[in-house]
Length: 309
Image (cartoon, rainbow, N blue to C red; front, side, top):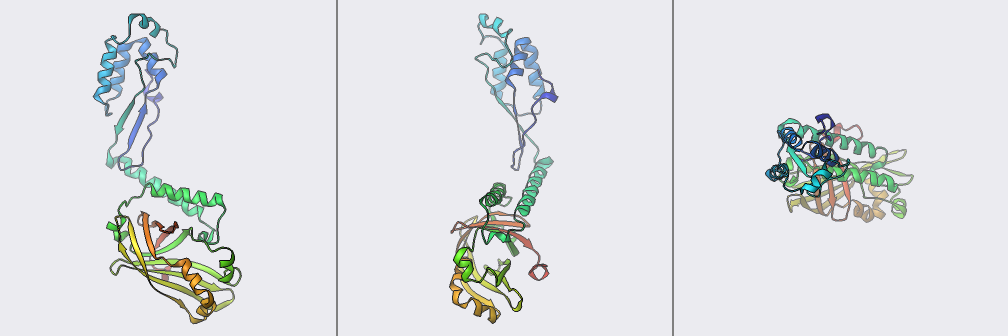
């Protein structure tokens, strides 16, 4: 029988309880059985102390120990088994150990989430939120990390915990893009720069305000923002329906720049439709809308205290 140090390492799952799966190595078991069945089976049972093993497995082991499943002519063959061979009646099986929820499982999950979030923040550095497009490899990298976080969402029913959604958020990534002629018409190539994107959610009023900040190169008077106000209502445990309410551009000088293409600008940033909240914790939120867009936002304390706001 292989020693404890030779036993395969536990594989920890990503749930509120962790499950260690131990696949018994067929060559080791076969070799042990061929040498001394009684000793091997008893040692195996003792080594499983603390593991949850199906009674069926132990009953099977006891039957094997009676040596009535293998005809006499096969017993001599068993003594000459090569590593990797196994009797027909032997099949690999899986032993499951359920760990204590309060000892380690939460830490493993928290560490995993923190690492994935760090990887995502690193991946979105220097891409201007993806608003002007990305290479396909970079987009794949970011959205793979997004999916990994979504699969470990610590708040599976976010609309039942809207306090986690409330407050001010800064957009760090979105699949909304402004490309080609749209970018040219809006003057976003050389003249106007897109700055920060913010969203403030007031759950008491069921209201959200999206703010897109702009600045004109060399003209401080043309720096300003587009504000879009919308109402929302809960549609399910994970989804909200969003209705456009109003929009404004300030100051007036900036409105004059965008007036001709205001509908184009509003069409890009209008949030009306529905939004699925696929991940939310105390510092990050991820959502997907009915247009197929992905949004990744980080929570900030206050726009006025944000150095880039």
